[in-house]
Image (cartoon, rainbow, N blue to C red):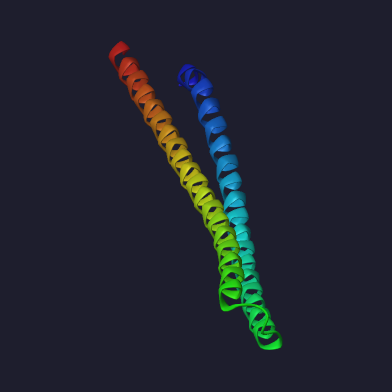
Length: 141
């Protein structure tokens, strides 16, 4: 019994280290999920700000049109299109950043799954080693 315990001690230490490593990875993953949520909130706030800027820009264009007849409809349309294009580029940038963040989160989830699978494999190997040691001990008697 004592030699079996001694034989299993290194494996148990490795399993314990893997479990600690997995717990650390889970904590990191939780922190990254928090960061993703914060990024999504910032993106929503930026989107709201962009919308209000677009509305303000539109209102400004309308005021200019009423205040001055010297601007042609084509010039105002061009200004509006430029403003809309700038807002659209900013929105695409935000969407691209969100997409990258989601991809990073999916990758981390896959890595977490691999860590769990590795730990389960190590546990199975320990069980097999324990069973083999028990079978050898029984055969020796």
